[in-house]
Amino acid sequence: MKHVDIYTDGSCRGNPGVGGWGAVLVYNGVEKELSGGERLTTNNRMELSAVISALSALKEPCEVTLTSDSKYVIEALEKGWAASWRARGWKKSDNKPALNPDLWEQLLRLTELHRVTTVWVKGHAGHPYNERCDRLATAFADSLKENE
Image 1 (cartoon, rainbow, N blue to C red):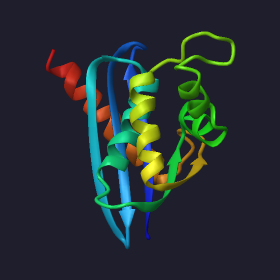
Image 2: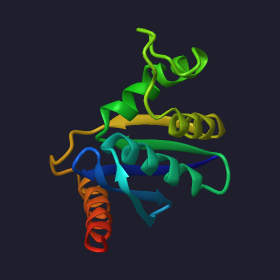
Image 3: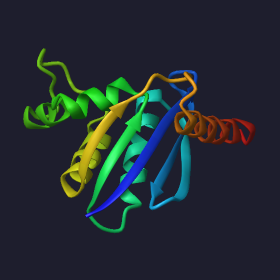
Image 4: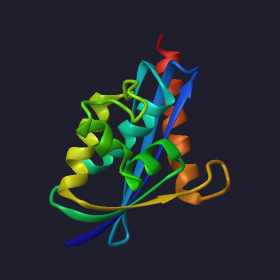
């Protein structure tokens, strides 16, 4: 199985507001940048979209090290929260609805295709790839804002 390092970040100008996401995939020394966004979204939706887009770009099942500054994404995957939400019909343990079930469903399907290990990094703390993903995300969000 090929090993790919994936770095992601999401950004939102207002929450909700104009948002962007960025991802960098690294395989065998080759880097690929991805970015996108939406006009009306939330930061958490952009964090999820970054991971979904990066995993979707893989052409075959891979071993993936996913690095993100989103505790929402990392902890929900690491601690099995997202899988539990799905098993309970997209309800959290307190019986309140889980947010973003459409994106979680996509992400869980992708994590079943790939062997994903998660790594949380502190945001805006100088991690080179995290900073690069942040620039990709904010640039995309800003481009959407300029075109309003």
